[in-house]
Length: 191
Length: 202
Image 1: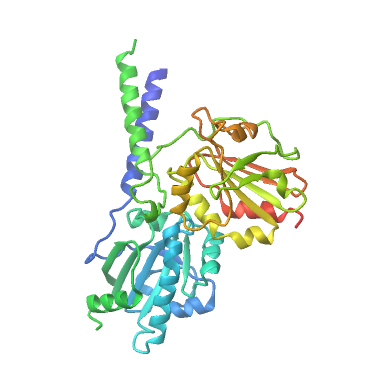
Image 2: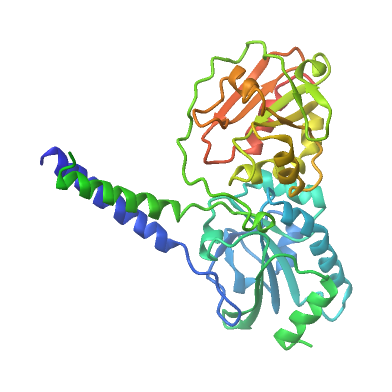
């Protein structure tokens, strides 16, 4: 094989590789659609495991979380908007926790796009976050939700039989936590 | 003269670059939406520093965004110093790096370290840009005029006039203990930096 043929072959092979990569990034799932089938590692802390109603080891999928509604935030410790939003989300967590009728039905989790465990810990400690935060160092979750800007919020309704529907999919602050809660209860038919 | 083969090669290479740049995951913050200039993928490192671990860190005095002038020598014998050069305001990666450091203040303090941020941008630009990050606890210095003189001293001025994405850790005695001239396209991990700081005398 001569030199230019070799070069052409290299180019074609690398192109195929990158085309594949380009398609590996999914569209952001919208309201009404099913949430992508992502996998998260089991939280190490026992209370977080209990909060999510998980038993066992290894990894789990969203429908395994024992809750009717799951509020999932895609964040990054490096994102100033996510930093500003942290106290707001803590407030939402507290409001839900105080409501006897809701506290076992709604769960909040955060996924740190591109953050390793150390970085997720910095974020957790800085804002004293009580709900589980997961590291997505390889951006695999971030890619499966279409590389959203941060913070991005999904509210997922578990509809049983390992199925779910997104009832909220938006970038940016959840604004007033009380109104946000009212709105998602309404949307989910839980009100 | 381009041969037909060469022409095809360049076209293919062009498509390749376009495809590649569309797949980069920045994990960008909504805070900067529409305000970040996309630099594309840059040459990872475009300078060669003569400084080495164990050498004395060159002193400098630069104006800061808050108005005061900051000299490296003022921390001598008092604090360990981390100098963070970032390439330019309003560019990807840089816009996420300092906000991360901003919530890690306690980790710097635990290691008796201060952080100094430097870019070659002018003060008004740095003012507007850092405002987007919220209140920063560390000084941000402008190496604007004479252009990039401190960056040049540290050997991290790129041929384009911006700086490398570089970290220098300097101990209380003014000795360089760690240098990371990072790939400009990616963010250096906070964990690595903290591990280096932990090695220093508190």
